[in-house]
Amino acid sequence: MGSAFFEMNIATTGLFAAQRGLAVTSNNINNAATKGYSRQVLDQRASSAMPGYGRGMIGTGVDTTQVRRVRDSYLDQKMWGQKPALGEYKIKAEQNSIIESVFGEPSDTGFTKVFDDFFTAIDNLSKLPSEGERQEALRQMSISFTKYYNSAAQKLTEYQRDLNFEMKAKVEEINNLVTRITSLNDQIYRAELNGDIANTLRDDRELCVDRLSQIVNIDAKEVDVTRPDGKVDKQFQIKLNGQVLVDGTYGRLLKVSARTEDQKKNPEDADGLYDIKWEDGLPFYMDDKDLSGELKGIIDMRDGRGSSSFTMNGEQHDPSITYKGIPYYINKLDQFVQIFAKSMNDVYNQAGTDGGQVYTDLTLDDGTTIKIPKHALFTYTEGNSKTPVSIEDMLLRDKDGNIVLEEVNGEFVAQIDYSKMTAKQFSVSDTVYDGASNIRTNFEHDPVDGSNPNPSSNDLLLALGAQKNNNKMFKDGDPKDFMISMFSELGINAKEAAMYQKTQKNVTTTIENQRLSVSQVDPNEEFINLVKYNQAYQAAAKVLTTMDGIYETTIFKLGNW
Image (cartoon, rainbow, N blue to C red; front, side, top):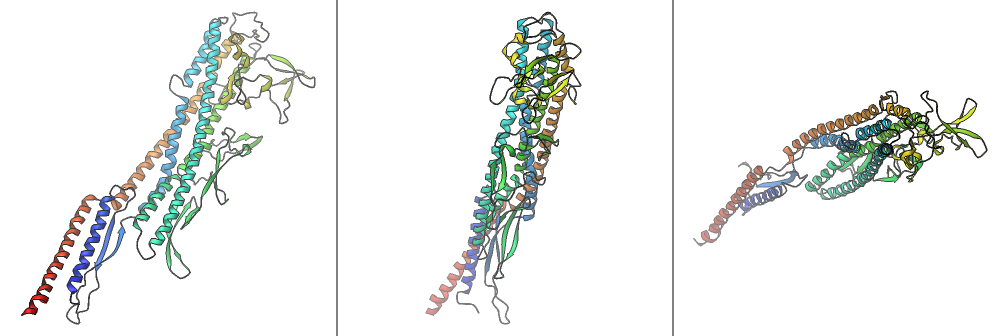
């Protein structure tokens, strides 16, 4: 048999359950627009019944067991598995598009325009070789042509530096997320010691993991850990590309360190690019093929040089990052100016149609006289200087700095070293830079000596103009074919990255919609719950009122009979 106020106690449990249900419903409604919030539900069950000793067991009311969030961990895992690819191709699509804008094709300032203008100026001068205005026009077009490559290479280097700082920012964001997650792990552990579920803290943690998974590929899961006293705790762990990043309240942090000159990955790299390392001193493998996420996209675009081996500091190297990023396109520009300048200079320095070269004497410090090329249309600048180097400064030298000579018909001849020429420092020669009248127009013309016995002759200009369609200059064909091939390659990479980004966006959007269908607050459902708990509250209150009337009659009125 229950107590004297047994029925009132039952009604009170219903009152408190309805009140708690209203609180949970109110919380859901007010967090409907909160990012990462998972809908919460109140679990309740009938209280343990009292024995009736053969007359039937009597219910004792209702118990609220827990407030739990509605969330599907399987969908979380699916999302965290797909987001790295989205982050990687998002970066690659953006950066490839930026590189395309550098070359300005098609436009009035792109390669095709400056290339055609340069050869048009040669053709115009060939019609009137001695006209000063046409000579100046060729000089200006030659300078514009070299500045196109200077500008393109400089912009690519600036974008590489921008990506370098963006990589540093991503590392800092990873560290901030790790610190936040470990702090939440500690708060969750403390909050759940008494059996509660830290719903809001878990939502916050998974929102952090959502963002972390787009920056870098991770494996996140909650595992059972047995304590020395035999109790089993839940411990949240995250691995970054197979390496421990978070283990409960312990988190590993990353750091960046600037590369020295001898640590450069590519000869085209800007100074001071960052390497990523673990703060505990262990290596972080930036070139790991399994790495993914926004961080991978930045590394590939910043360091990717394609698959071709290269020579740096006198040693042969294989590229650590084989994606075609900024160093790859800088290298392609360098290749163009080196091959193009050599082909044009070989023609420009010809003594006649037979291809023989014009040489001049150079006396070395030891008194030896050697032959060096006399004329050049294109050279380069060094360091921060705007002045083009002389032909003597361009000569091929060995590792000790001595000029490399070859014997030709009993004379020692030196050749120009084009491997030092880069797109960033590509320039017209010092003689052409000094004045338009110094441009050679025919094979007998010698601007250095000031002799031009046949000023109306244009045979050299015609030979220079023919280089426009010289399909043997490059493996890809003529000069324009080489550049168009590079533009096509860039366009394909940009479209491929955009396609993969779109595909991954569709995949992650589908998964996100599935998650929302499970976890998102449905206002209609919450309004129904609001009515349900309100009615339950009123019903419980009515029971209390009824029982109060019964007890009032029993105690105060029946006693007076």
